[in-house]
Structures are given as C-alpha cells and as structure tokens.
Image (cartoon, rainbow, N blue to C red; front, side, top):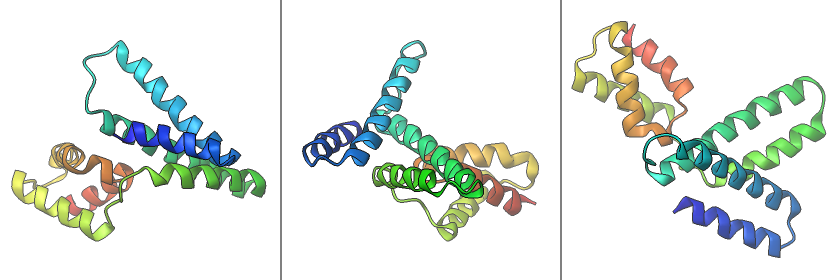
Length: 150
C-alpha cells in the first residue's frame, strides 16, 4: 500500500539524515492522518490508496500554486523549498495521463454514454473521474471535456 511506502521512505530519510525529505514526508503523513480523522465521522472508508492519492494530488496542487505566488513575489528561496516538497510528493503519485491519452479517454466515454452536448458534461466528468481519477488533473480534464462537447 502507498501508506506503507511513505512510512518506509520516512524512516529511510531519517536514517540518511535528509532533513528536507524527512520534513516533506512528515507533512504527507500528517495530511493523510488528517484525512483519516475526517473520514472516521463519515461513511465506511473507501479504497485506501485512492484516498492517499487524493491527498497527495491536493498537496501537489497547493505546492504548485504556492510556487507560482512565491515566484511572482520574488521569494525564490521559498519557491525552491516548495519545489523540493513537490518533488517528494510527486514521487508517490501515479504517472499522469498525457493530453492525447486523456482526449482519447474522453472520446471513448462520450461514445459509450452517447454524450452530445454540454448537458452531458456532468455524466462524462463523473465517468472520467471514476475510471481515471487518480491519473488525471481533473481541472485540466474539465476544460478538455468542455471543448470536446461544444
């Protein structure tokens, strides 16, 4: 499981005395624990790896936004720190689908559910997320689905 891999990597980073990597891995573990606590009050837990990947994707998105803001503000040292954290986070994310693969998946789903216009965007997005949610940036995919249906 992905959770165990992260724990193992944390121990390895601590033994190697790699402070930045250890700090980033501890941040990841803390976010995962936060999500565990959050899910205790809701319904039965879903697929654990899917939940961990969801947490990692949100963390990666936050880091990308922070990097952009720090670069715009001239804070290169903070941008570099965020970039290092992003690199560690991305190690645990599955390979993202390319634009061509995503477009092919969108076209395939459109054909299967007979999507014709913008009124079917929700159906296409739901199916796309169900099939490829962990391998896609759903923000970008949304734009591609919209362009495909219009």
